[in-house]
Length: 324
Image (cartoon, rainbow, N blue to C red; front, side, top):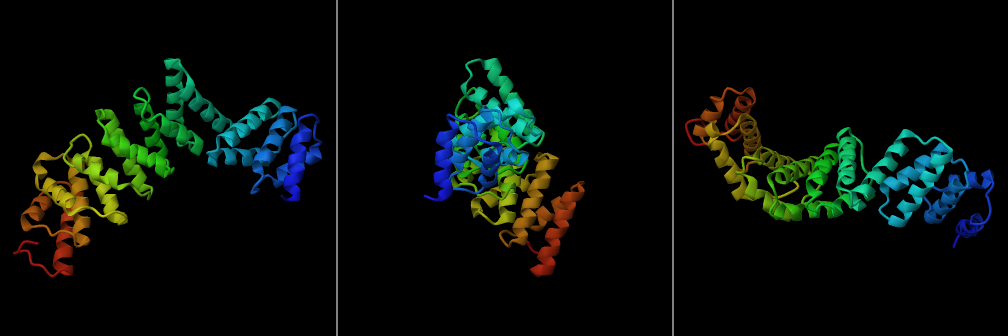
């Protein structure tokens, strides 16, 4: 044990029965960051805040950062208590007030037996994340535990759409839970939300499981979600992080051949995917398809068709009189 660790243990005992001088509080604040004995120091600061000591803004921010990153329940609870005690004696920065509010909402959402109260907490978290606010790792873990609660799942998925759209990463355990969820029988809204979450996960350059990729195939022809499904496959192809089964690519290609039956956004996404697959030397289109795409009135689809033709003629040396 180091001298600092020994001193921290002595101070933790001392502060239970005595007030610490401001100089000692200042010293604890200076050594709080990046120490293995942080939990003891946090407990000392909790008692100091309870005894109406004023904590510096730097310390408050350090504590809030630790709260945001930590998944250890005891540490998180001690930090929350410290910040709540500090709030009685001094004005907290807005970012910390918001963090404490989100912690409060998730406790209500997890523990309240009053449905109206829980629903309000859910809406507050949804609005916060919709406005770009990020949630702590501990809160995300709490939301994960609610994914298989039939009353809560739709609202939690909506929050996770916002979280991932804000560029925040989900840990592998949450991603695996979402993969398990998509394997189950789910309603239309939850299906749409899950696909949107996975689209954002992949856009954020996170790795998805083989379980999810296997399940994703069944949605290629599902008109409720296949616009986003094709976007997922396009992003996977661009990132080259996952092997896309050739059967999947063939099914997507066949879907584009039925272009008259598709809505515009899906046509665009399909043409983007096929263009990328051609440029990656995975497939070769035929003249009939290229002609069909060139006859589309949409500029993006026409542009993709022209780029496909350019690649096949200039790069691969094909002619337009043969199937390319």
